[in-house]
Image (tube, rainbow, N blue to C red; front, side, top):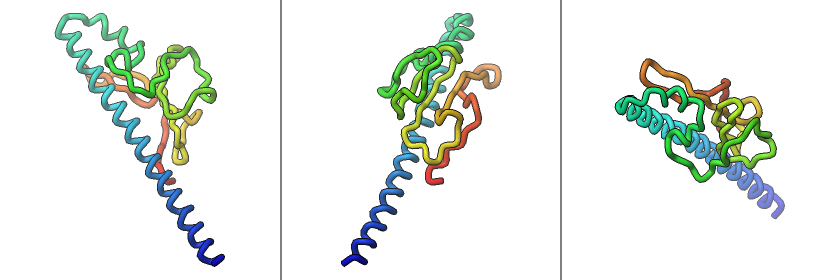
Length: 146
């Protein structure tokens, strides 16, 4: 009976580890999709501004909250902060640091994350002559399951 209990315990531990890995992969995918949606929405918005002759709004938009510029707000957006204390905030959420003008994601599951502060920071950067994108403000690696 003890052998069966040990085998079941090992099986549960392996399954739990795989479940956490799958959840972390899903969280990373959700973060990537959010960044892609923001980049698309912002470039559409900026193209509309160019078309309407409102070129002065482009430089100003790059300093604002990307969710505001993109006219979207996910359910896990905490809001805008001045120099936020990241450790005090709930994980699995987005926020905008007005001081550094960076969008921050606080991963809930971060076993495979290698990043300063256990957070991923993004900032606007001009790509080419006509487009802008949120790019990582600092190098990071997030390989779930590592």
